[in-house]
Image (tube, rainbow over all chains, first blue to last red; front, side, top):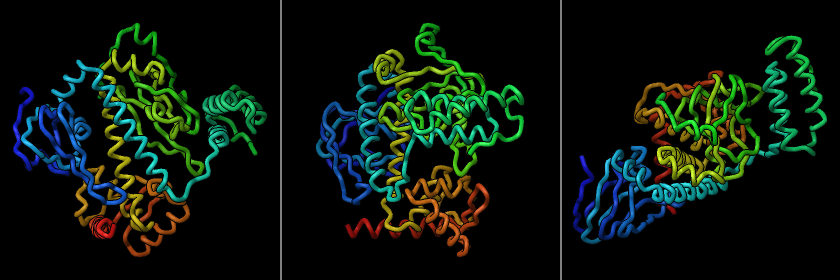
Length: 192
Length: 221
């Protein structure tokens, strides 16, 4: 099958929100609205698609349900690509991929911010000491090589960190146990 | 998956890295600005919570991981451990564009990973916009059911591989608060808590409650 050229009259629906998808559209000429509700406010949002723009990309690419309803505003011509056809098209036009990667990553950043704002009970985060305590976990569970890796990374990321001295001692301890008992062997190393 | 990914030896010379079995590729909380394409071997995704290690996923050749580092300078959210001797391609922000244009198949893969993540995050946002903690927790189970392709009008028992801590994480709630609500649900016979699983007795009940609330909140806005 080849990409299909389709003509639509005003008010036609190209697809409905919730429809299963296996294609991506390119608006050759005309005007199309993408209609959806804002997740947070429920407010209806209309996004205008104009000549030369792709739409239905995210859903079509991974064959998920459509996130919006695509409604035609004036006489319009669209090209429908199956997912496979679309992939082979963009493989030959990497600038399109880069543009889409940029748009997707912007969307992700935006949603990530919204998510962060709504996460009410923020867990206090101190990545440095959290990383250090993962080293402790491995040492306690006699995973000596992994403990050494984590402590060493802690030291290299945070050379002036609070636990550098302890991390060095524990690396030596892990090495000693690894040598005497082998990975996973020996009594549980005592750490405070 | 399991396909052969041969980008040529020069490509591997440039970007390739090998890890031995049991090596840590990166560790939870570690700062990171590289992402990976798995060429050979399996990689375990794990997280350490309340002093036990939980495997979240096992990645197979052809998969991408660490990709969030291209977007944000946040610490790694999980630990990646080589389950076999592993070969990966390692990328960063600097070589990203040249890589994406020279290997469009990789770029498309990444595009799909991002698309899935956008859907996931939007779904998470839907959970978080619910006005009450109880509803948020119910909606986490609805989301899990959707991911398993289970119809939420199903009235039979469904068991989910999830621990309370993860439920709390999904709804952005304090662990203790979440556990209290879960035990309360258990008393009401709405679910059964196992050691690392949760059985929901009637997912359709959750679906009705959440959806009616979601509709009423949206119209009142």
